[in-house]
Image (cartoon, rainbow, N blue to C red; front, side, top):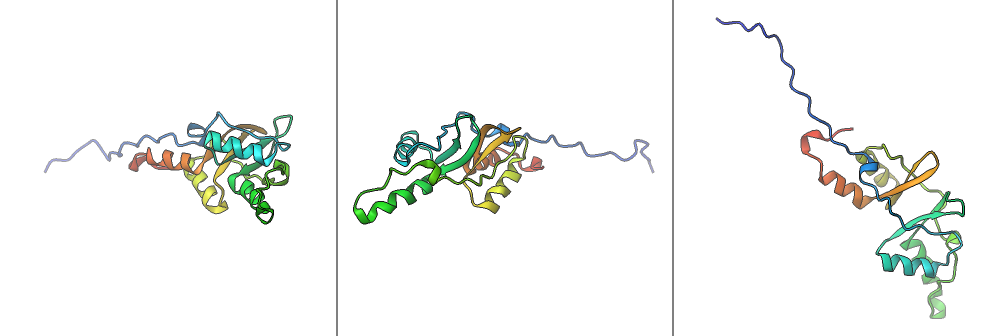
Length: 153
C-alpha cells in the first residue's frame, strides 16, 4: 500500500466576477427639472426612447423621478375635454420618495431592490451626488453575462 505525504488538497478558489452596479449603470443620463412641463418631458422621452429619468433641482440635487406612467396619468386627465393635458409641471407629478442605490452594490442585490419595490430604475448615488442610473434591463443584462459557477455576493 502506497501512502501520499502531500496531505489534504484544497480545491482552487474560483475567481469572483465583478457584478457591481457601477459596472453596469448608465452614466450619460437625460435628467429633468421640476419646473419643466409634462408635455416637454413626454416629447424628450419619446425622442430619446427612454421611459423616465431623475429630476434634479437647480443645484443638481436629486429631488424626484418622473416616468412615462406619471406623465400618462396627467395626459389622461384631459380625456373629458377631448384634449390631452400636458401643461402640468414635473414637480406636481414626479415621485419624490426616491429609492436610490450605491455604486458598489451587487447587481443581484439590486435585482432584489427592484423586485421588492416595483420600480423600473434606480438612481445611483454616492455622497449625495448622482453618478448614474441602473434599470431592470441593465441588471438582467449583467446577470446574463455571469458565468454560472461564479455567481456570488
